[in-house]
Amino acid sequence: MKRRILAVLAAVAVGAGLVAAGGSAAAAPTTVAKYVALGDSIAAGQGGGVPLDACARTDGGYASQLDDVPKVNLLRHPACSGATIGDTAAQLSQVNRGTTLVTLTVGANDLGLDTVYAQCATVPAGGDLNACLMAVQTVIDDAPGLVQPLAMLIGAIAQRAPNATIVVTGYPHLLEPVDVQACALVAPVEQCLALAALAQAVNTAADALNAAIQAAVAMAAANGANVVYADVVQAFLGHGVQLLPGAPSDPWFGVDPVNDPAGFLHPTYEGYAAYTQVILSKLNP
Image 1 (cartoon, rainbow, N blue to C red):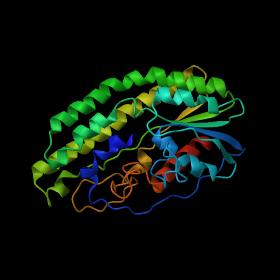
Image 2: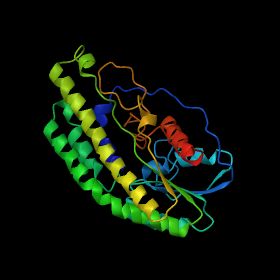
Image 3: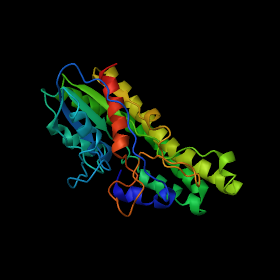
Image 4: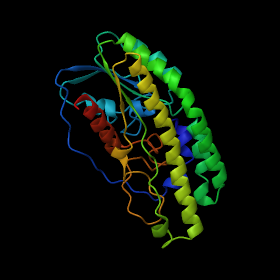
């Protein structure tokens, strides 16, 4: 997501800590995969380490972590922060008939999630919850419009790389659900209800986007593309940004807008490790 999109959630993430976590390595593909990574800031690996270029690519993103897996060879990595579906179409020149693995993460910027976050980030400080919910509803209403253009993009990838497996990822939930009863022990009930509604709203926006991505994958597959959908929501469960005051927090998102503005609210290395595991599971069912 665009950096300016993420900056508006600074108040939400204040006080959340980072604890490194990871999983065991999955089995590598049985043959060498000639790999190209396409898409937006998540595909670029923004937040996975020090930005290497203007696209915020890092050595800790899922593309780079996949490149470290035996028999996966990352040939080209044109993914770029801020990319939309249309922008990603311009990345297709990096895909050819020799490509045997393509990953794709895109769609968040098309829906203008900056509007959702801008509205919803004010709720913890007494902002208008109804405005947040209205912004989420706009995402829900607009998300189906992504299905056809995204399916066409996947089809274009399949045409350029007919021998490739295409793995299209979804997006994780940013916020941990709020337990109102636990919250009420340390904060007013009204505040707890607002925080719970905020978390549900922001995560519902991600769910709407993921549903559109999954539908696009199904449409492209029905038209002959060798494509699978990789759902990362469960992999991030328990590792979203915690809104409950004083609750233990182990987020797989950057939470320091001052010292790490590029990585703020993007997955950390550990978050991208979770992406990597999910992608590998699709290559090794």
